[in-house]
Length: 319
Image: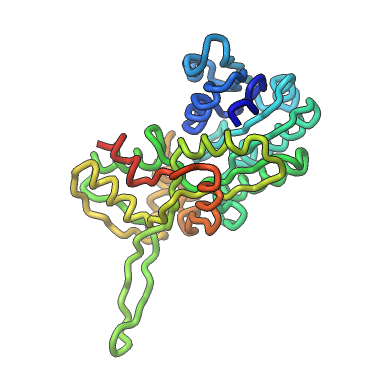
């Protein structure tokens, strides 16, 4: 693997994001050239310093038209798409970013003779028919495969690391609030004499994957074709367990409050009116489905030695 990337020309869409920074840093250790396509030149120009002089080039993208995408792909051997959004606004819609763009990238890659396309999607999108986020992600996979059948699709569970939007969010909330929400409907169980008792939910199940392991997996499988990889970390944790880990290493005590889905939806209706919402109604729909995989960890561990758990990494950046 150490020589398979040498001399290759790699183009990355979405390289300025959380996953992109780790991937570019790792790719820069090879004798390859890396082009990072972004609409925000000022935000990504510092990425050039992750590699050797002249190894990393930042390319400004004004729009996601077929013509513009095609022009940027010319001369590339490998194309990697990391573009994704967590919520919609008037400028960015799930359907356009997640649904249509992968197909445009796939079509242009095929026309320009690209040998490999790697697309990072999300775990469970093929099963969640309620969430617009999930449906758009799955649509994007289908559109990509229709244009570039040999594409490799990677579906990670929730990704964590120093700059993540998940662990850090709840760490910040714990600084401001005396309690933290555990979203999920209670279950009715029957004890003696058939008396119903509410068993409050401990939240959605997750199988978090470390961003460094995800970046390494992309590199290890970068020459694979026509594959779909579900990826997940070593441990399955419910929402409450994750919150407890955050509180443990922040060395604070907070009350964990069960929040039923209907109440979370009402709260999200208010929060999503803000420019950068911490919760949306669509995210509540996502939380109704566990984010775990039977094959996710085995897929990861075949290529990554000793994948890192949340409990090991969180103490290095949550204090």
